[in-house]
View 1 (spheres, rainbow, N blue to C red):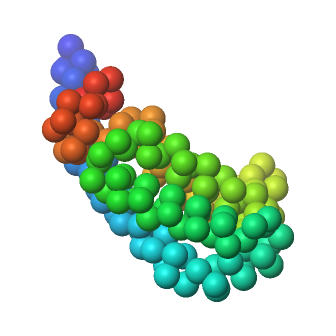
View 2 (view 1 turned 135 degrees about the vertical axis):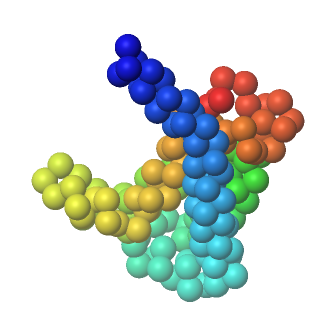
Length: 153
C-alpha cells in the first residue's frame, strides 16, 4: 500500500509540473523560432544565398517561407495560440532543414545518433513534437480561449 501511495503522490507532482514545463518549452523554443525566422527575413539575401548553396529550388521564395513559418509559428507557439496547428509547419520546416542542411546528421540517425541529436534542427524539432503531442498546456491562450480540449490537462 505504501508503494501505491508513493506512486500516486509522484503522479500528482508530475501532473502538476506538466503545464509549467510545457509553458517553459513553448516560451523558450517559440522565442528561438521567432528570432531565427526574423533573422532569415531581415537578412533575406544572405539566407537565399545559403539556400542556393544547398541547391534548394527558388531560394528566395523558400527563404521567405521558412523565415515566415519560423517567425509566425514561433510566436504562436510561445503564446500557446493555435499551438498544435502551428507546430505542424514548424516540424515540416525542421525536417526540411535536416534533409537539406544536415543530411549527414539525418543519415547517421541509427549509426551515430549523437550526430542526429546534436544537429541544429533537433531541439527545435523536439519542442515542436512535444507541443503537437501534449498540447500547449493549461498556461496558454489556447486553454484560456477553450481551444485546448484533449490536450495535456
